[in-house]
Each structure stands twice: as structure tokens, then as C-alpha cells.
Image 1 (cartoon, one colour):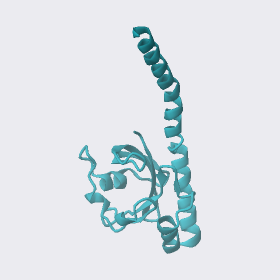
Image 2 (cartoon, one colour):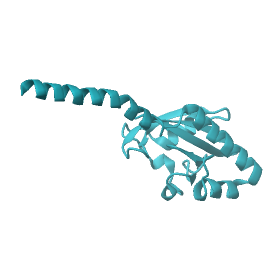
Image 3 (spheres, rainbow, N blue to C red):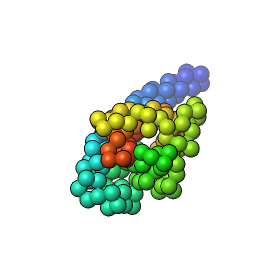
Image 4 (cartoon, rainbow, N blue to C red):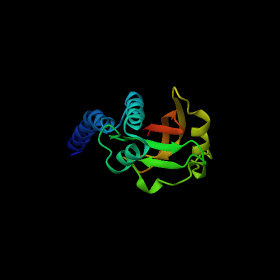
Length: 160
């Protein structure tokens, strides 16, 4: 009897160990990469320049094709004045109009001020805590932020 229980436990543990990499890989396949985040921002800036502010922001927010919302990645745009007001957001429309300088991450970092301070025309990474769209938990996030024509275009990588 003890040998049978031991054998069953050994089989169960072996199955779990064999399945763990597959489960981790499945979760990883839902995550975007830093390079993909940078590409989304570049495409967003290009569309902004091509069709103008109103049409681009509408596309990002209301019709975010995979170019602007992919896996856990999504474009967001802040006006680089007025406290970094959110003017487009492919993930959470309800954030539009929010003054990003009122958003404080769990570590006490003012997210809007951090984006204003770090975003450049060439782009820079801004680190803060934010809700992961896959798990629903606040996790570390790094967003690629590009300052372009008075707006900060961003897309971030969640780090659960």
C-alpha cells in the first residue's frame, strides 16, 4: 500500500514537473517584448503624422488593430502639458481625460511626472507599477515613451 501511494505521488510530481515548462511557455506567449513595445510606439507616431491627431487618437482608442494593441501591449498617449493628461488609451478608455500626474504607483512614484521627466524625442524607458491586463495584479512595468509634437506616445512591457 505504501509503495503504491509513493508511486502515485512520484507519478503526480513527475507530471507536474513535465507540465510546468509548457504552462510557463503558454503564459509567456501572452506577453509582448520590449522590441514590440517600441515598434507599437513607432507605428503610432507614424500614424499620427500621416492622419493627424484626431484620427490617430480615435484609431488608438476605438479601433486599436494589432498594430496598437497586441498581447499585453497597448498604445497610450499623454499630452505633454496639463499634467500629462491621457488623450488616447487602447486598453482602458475610461482613463482618457485623466491627469496622469494624479496616478501614483504602489511605490509612491508619480507616473505622469515620471513620464514627463524621462520621455524624449529618441525615446526612453519609464519604470513604474501598473495593473497587468493578464493577471489583474499590479506589477512592475517599463514603458517606452517617445515625446513627439507635444505628446508622449507610450507602450509598456509588464514584468510579472
